[in-house]
Length: 240
Image (tube, rainbow, N blue to C red; front, side, top):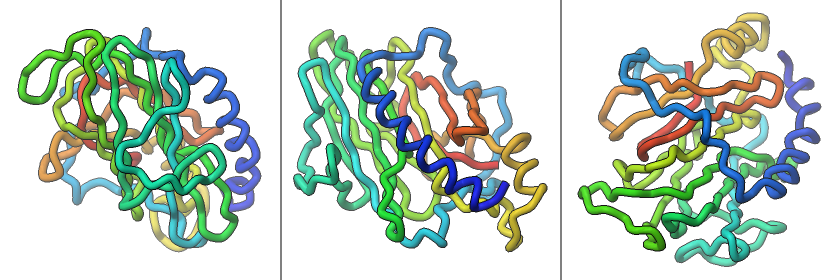
């Protein structure tokens, strides 16, 4: 795995956005599974989080989404357009999810050198059923969801933490913007390829002080993404 290979995939990643928009209101959670407590659990200092590739310079983020009635409205988000997206200020974006309405949000990353917008996080939701305080959410009622991204590592956090879903919600995370040097030893070689193929995974964390649990997730090595189905909110990362 080399930097050339990663760059060659940029075009195919851009094409992903077209297919994502075509299926914007389709949830793929029928065969999903939620995080499983029996899977390996690790303290934060034992994990190797993937980091944004410093060779591409500081990373910016842009968000877009759709509802059954048109583009999604972001709460208190300045309308600084980037194509069909809006730039994400302070590394967080909020929107209203409505029980019984399928909608999605996608956050892309933009490297400062090539100014190429590529997919990072996509979240599909239709069935929030219970707030963290235990109160139910009736069909047609809404709940404010905030998605926070990390400017250093491939980590995303969803709030309110503990929000429960009836039908599992689909989360997809791309790691194409991460450094190819997965083990941080200064070189990209077969060891990094082995990590990607055999050790890399998706993890979740209930609260920032909690240990991390492994998630059962689909992994596309070719397109560099993980896909999992969530029954509640917390933090999520691509790590090994």
